[in-house]
Image (tube, rainbow, N blue to C red; front, side):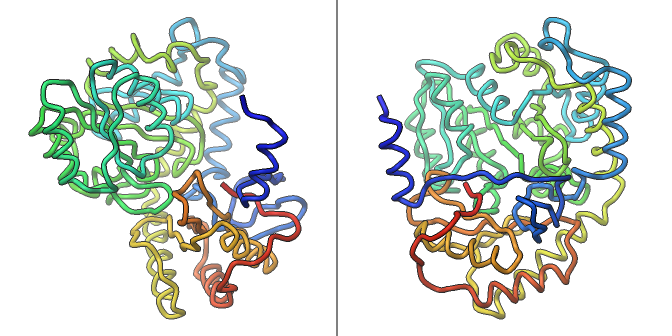
Length: 400
């Protein structure tokens, strides 16, 4: 059993202690946090929809129509017309037969993996997958085997070893801490050849990647029926680019029916508030209609990367709004985050266990609400970052 006080002291000493800040007001690029306005580059609100007037009004209208809470699980009496309409819209958006709403992305991944895998079977996972995919595999009681990041050759070897037992391959579409993309065409071919299923968690791709924002699969041209055949299980979240809350699983009609019957994290939890579903419908419409949001986002990413190269910063190769700057040790990442905050800029320090030991970083993220001048201010400040770890002092910034 963990000795609580000793464990807290150990985390503090190791530079791994987390402290929360209080956000006062809506999410945005200039949030008011602990009473101070900061220029923020650490939100997942990639399209700037979390405080959009149309989304807010849809939430208000949904609450007037359906109340605040759903009152029950989907299978009791909590599945509203708004939920049903959103599931149909999401399925159409990603080009799948059906979609199933879940309360969070974490619960979606736990529910899918544990429903589709079990003892005597194998879950093969990218080494840098999100924690929810790892935990879903553990909950399933299948054998979890992890291949080196984006190493399709090693995955093929593991699939060859697994002949005779059912296998599920699970991967992020966009890796949340590095911003790079999974090699989905190669993964799909490897899974198809071995008779395995492929599951993609596209939490950070939906709304952002592809000409119409349909995510990493659209980026690779894996759309429509062909995409569903090659990547039969697609998970997406609503709380990132779409700016609301919740998640969904999309795939064939039989897959969704099976999840309704077997996914424990769907069966045994209260349904999303119907008003959130109605707000998400508005956000989905904006995602499709206002293509300038993705265009500006990509322009900002290009501007930042060009500027970072000019000032000698080495970035991970990422085409997404996630642009990590690797510090190495936790103390350096914290020192960098403090330095930026002292200059009015909020970028969180990301440390183990969120990322592997020795790869602590600043996780810089962009929103369509940022302006080019905001990026220039960030670059000017980054040009003066302290280059070595600093002794821990004062209040630590909010971080992961």
